[in-house]
Picture 1 (cartoon, rainbow, N blue to C red):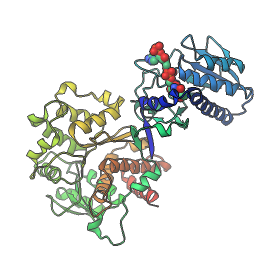
Picture 2 (cartoon, protein in one colour):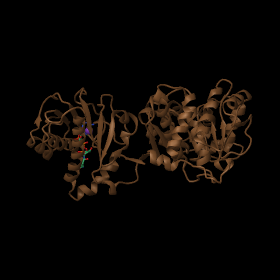
Picture 3 (cartoon, rainbow, N blue to C red):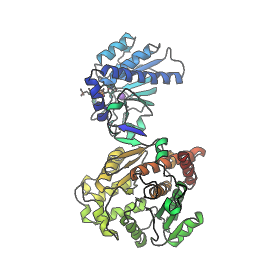
Picture 4 (tube, protein in one colour):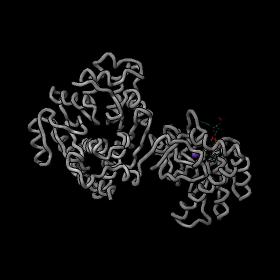
Length: 508
Ligand SMILES: NC(=O)C1=CN([C@@H]2O[C@H](COP(=O)(O)OP(=O)(O)OC[C@H]3O[C@@H](n4cnc5c(N)ncnc54)[C@H](OP(=O)(O)O)[C@@H]3O)[C@@H](O)[C@H]2O)[C@H](O)CC1
Ligand SMILES: [K+]
């Protein structure tokens, strides 16, 4: 499991050590880690001796780290220079730098590697780098200067780093938003903060954590104990969405898929997957629902949405299902209140056959545009975010939507953010650009539906939270995207085989 922390969490973790007078030791560890990373970059591209490294150095401790690192690098026979952007600089760092032969310059001198150390976690407000980004390899000290360590937001001119060497713990802002795009390869240097770190702000599943979460069938289970997924998907205009989501579910592993769809859609699904059973209206018991890919604006599928939402079972709502949900929210005057309430449950109680409450078992899987409409419908329009702000602050808005609506949210984007109503959040950011293809989302809905059916009910794996399974679904989907991309671009129809391979990797 990868854990990430806000800038303030890391600064609070440093506090007891600084109070014990260990600030210089912390900075020495940070600087040493940074120096090693820069030396590695030099070695990767040739010799070390005689090369040139320049620092763009601010007046705070971030600049201090860089000056100590430059001093260490200079002792390896590298020519080092520094531009001091704040007029002053960390006094001990500057003394070490000049003692090692480093030169302060007015202009940035040509260099093989440039260290970006204008600002670190002390950054607040707005920032425009004092110089244009050089063509050299850029190594960011702690984080690219001007990236907000908590949110990942950054001004337009903030430099893109090739490598970011971050100290003490991974910062949330390097996982999401522009911070993710600007940080390049991220390396965490341990400076001894471990015992002082709180619960992480966000987590990300690595392969081991994904493998531990993956529901695995037991020898003595039959298809019903493995879990049955009810899939409400496809319409005469979009029959393929049903085929792709069924494929995603089957490739992930589930006891059975029951599809609720019009005849022509069912026939198509059955032709591709004869093991699927189906009907026009919801029939038979299921352990989870997946609702929405390609559904039409007709009474039957609306009713099925109501049945799913009213069942109290784990349910993923995607695509057209989200539109329908948005209309329900908009139509109910009680959904137009303050930000914190009313809860979705009050609205759903009217549309469902049985009363229900919203809860983390409902997983909405919007992209930024869909979340914009959902929140606009849910709130008084005045404090609903624009699509742009959702895209620049995906973690904030996924969390906020989960809290306001009272559900689990999987927000799609360059990095997928999964958030539960209590603020628990996961970020999965290792997809492949080819994954952005028509039908890819339908496959994801199938994957998540299967995980909810097998991973949350009492007869199954049982203990996983929907937010964890949402993160696992994103992780499987992204791994599948990378596996499928080996041979070049692909259509979503080819993803299912790669989903099976990804699941096999995690199950091994
Ligand atoms: N604390 C430690 O011993 C360790 C710290 N590490 C490194 O330190 C930085 C954080 O250092 P800090 O000095 O707190 O802050 P910065 O260096 O990031 O920036 C400080 C100054 O920048 C100015 N500032 C803030 N926002 C802006 C802005 N938008 N534009 C321009 N300038 C800005 C601010 O000065 P003001 O006078 O304007 O308030 C700050 O003084 C951390 O990132 C690590 O790199 C090590 O990890 C080791 C231990
Ligand atoms: K920096």
